Image 1 (cartoon, one colour):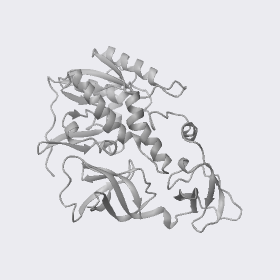
Image 2 (cartoon, helix red, strand yellow):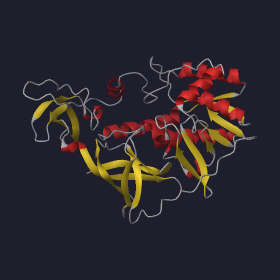
Image 3 (cartoon, rainbow, N blue to C red):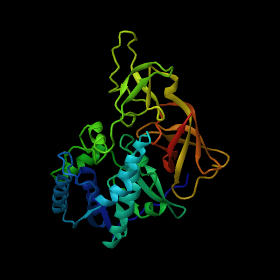
Image 4 (cartoon, rainbow, N blue to C red):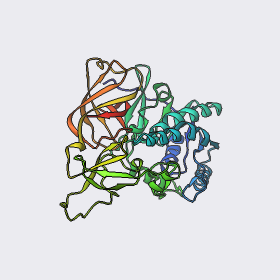
Length: 368
């Protein structure tokens, strides 16, 4: 694998996405230490005042960080673009019975899309974020690599960012462990050094997922049946469940069954049936998938027509899985895994790697 050329930040104006959290604040410190002219840009992407959104607190934390570090802070509202380009996709996927990952689209459309355009208006030469990943230039094109901390690597969520944007982007935390980031924040006297990391999807926050989704999509209860057709219970709406799910099914402890846990193993959208089974049922596993909306970082890897041997993840933080990827005549990609995969969910992303380099990915459409 060709060694990447590092993107230099010294004496360049770098527009940093500053969320108000620890990661982006430490990224600001590292950029300053590298000689960059750092400007912070805080985004508001969701503004429902429902008691769960922390946007106001995050903005105040961003102001405090910039005050401590002596860097300018700009604030911009992308909530309309977020609803149009990310949230509507999120709802459409759930309507179709799939399990989307809106963070991938948010990175491509917002953080490295409209945010990048706005950064240029501020005179930005480079864009920076607090992601745990690494960027570089290989053979004149932007490239993406895993972060050094395997427990925090976020290249999975960045795989759909195009090579042009990556060539103008830096990730100062890419070489660091999370514990080291916390230490830098504490040693630098940042008031947010012990701020809790944000988790989950930004617009849902800490609220129950089912409660949130039901405000946008009406519930449609139906039968919960085994692969053999036996009715086991009633589901609250196919959108609330994902393949492999075992919590929240409400069918545990049946006297006529063993103690093995129940899993969601399929969805029948035509008949509004949720298919469930006990234990490690064969329907939980697959060794093949078809991916659509394929997105390669730069040119498609050589060998796809006849089959590319690489590794892939079908969910965030999954260990790399050896596979064979082939481009089909309709532009989709067929992926065959060396080992069967558990609970591969349509709507999620399969992301491809060559060792530490992220090659791109696709939306999981069919499994088999």
